[in-house]
Image (tube, rainbow, N blue to C red; front, side):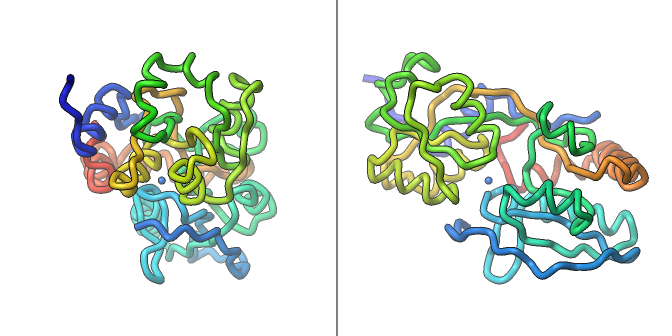
Length: 269
């Protein structure tokens, strides 16, 4: 019988297989994102739209907002000689808030998609990721055949208005889909056997598997999609978009971008 891998080994193997890597040119709170008080436009302030429930990308720790995106937001604001202000929003309100000029930029683990590009201009990608499935360890053999095995699921959990939901709707319409308000609620539903799996962004799925290892959760060793994370801008804000692209190129060339990514996602390459 093959030796079971530890979560640390699973993380290393998963990122190796998935090919999560830097491209150049998700502490869990379980809380829903609260809507922040509106901040008017200010030349000295960078208003950053975030949904802080997705460690290690963006989440709350105590009273502060931390994660990969939070660190990048602070560095980008410094580059602009502005003060960063995080505006907490529900995920589905990110793009509306941007278009209504209630925020200047979306920095919340958003993937580039064709439909989003209709309304939003994206920066160059800063990270390659994809969708991954969180499952119970006892079901590992059941799903060992890969993507085809997903059709045997009785219910799959997703977060509304995400690429995970789109993936399930497009490829597994015959399987019951259940929407959850937070990734933490979905993980609990997997533990409680209310759903067979939860599909979400790979970094967050790995975080949830690590967080719930003793409760019997693991991951399915297949990247279900290939996605690129980037920052969103209003299409008429070409100056800020150009500044973001210049910042990302410079930050990467100096080796600083890779350093921050590895701090929050140690097994990314």
